[in-house]
Image (cartoon, rainbow, N blue to C red; front, side):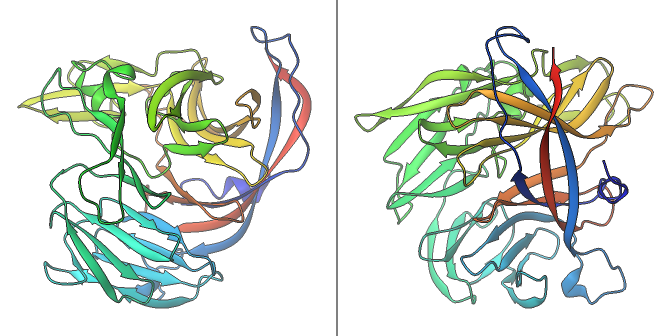
Length: 385
């Protein structure tokens, strides 16, 4: 890893992924697979938010979502400032959309952001209980009431939208992960992905971590591929037949270890990576393996960013799958220092990929920043046994 790439961690990144040589898989090695060890290098292209002396338009408070449009403009939804700031592809500030409030083009929370085929922005505001559709210049186009309180990963889908969003209020509750809506966001036309297929409905840690992250699923030639936040080496493939979607198979990743260990008397970042408050009780866990983002590249390969534990160390790295879903390589990007209690502090949220295979990542460790870097992945002569 270069000195430049070492300086990138503890920061938010935007990654351009270039697979410079094909990985191959043979029937031997790890189980029945050969998994190639990859050499990963990072090359910085652009930084947003790194200069604390810059004007306020270039400083972020609590960025939650990022999307880009067909011209490469960057839209950052900031929960602290309650607006969406727009930058061109070189990082120059253009305008601010919206403000805090309850009126037209005003927001109280950002709980989902998307851009549709018509280059219109869609923002979910569960505090105001509505979905707002508006132009990239900030013109209000429509609002739609929203009864479900859960946040959502929203994607344009055919003539409407697909939401990854669930809500389970009590232990034992079962809900659907995915819902298909028309352009008017009325009642869903299809709901699928029962939560009890992925998580124990009586385990609040597992059901909470099914919450929608901005990069938890992708569409592939075979269907829809989903990665839960608590990662146990399984990606879940849903396929459609006759208008109905079902979980048909799982795809094996690198890890085979339980994603977390529950701890007593949890204290965040002391003995636990994850703390959940529920019904006057507190649950906590030391998380071993986490999915950080699942993406399909222009060449149909699948890239899965992870934080995984090998031995007594954790690593931020990348699993690479071929178009058929076969794991063909893994590259560690950064070794994450552990505290004495075994906690790994890495605050990278990889939230978006544009059409040029650039990945947009938010880091909340210090003053939030967004970087543009190229991620160069090269095969090595080594395999992971």
